[in-house]
Length: 52
Image (tube, rainbow, N blue to C red; front, side, top):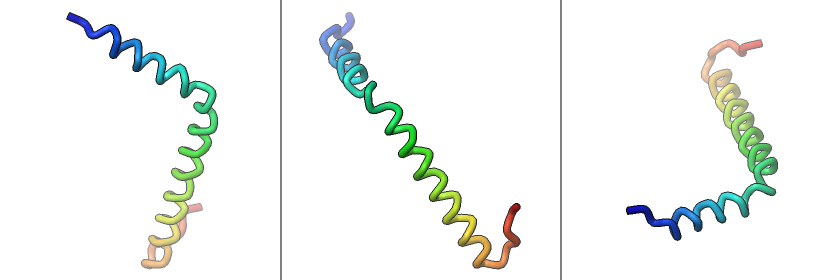
């Protein structure tokens, strides 16, 4: 009914990634802020007023 070996493999993979969670979180936020900043500059170039 359940594929325990697949479930164990998924759990092992997630646990192996735990030391990198903080770095991945910081990378995600930096990319998110960069995209938002780029969109803000684009909208300003198109004539929309900047948001302060």
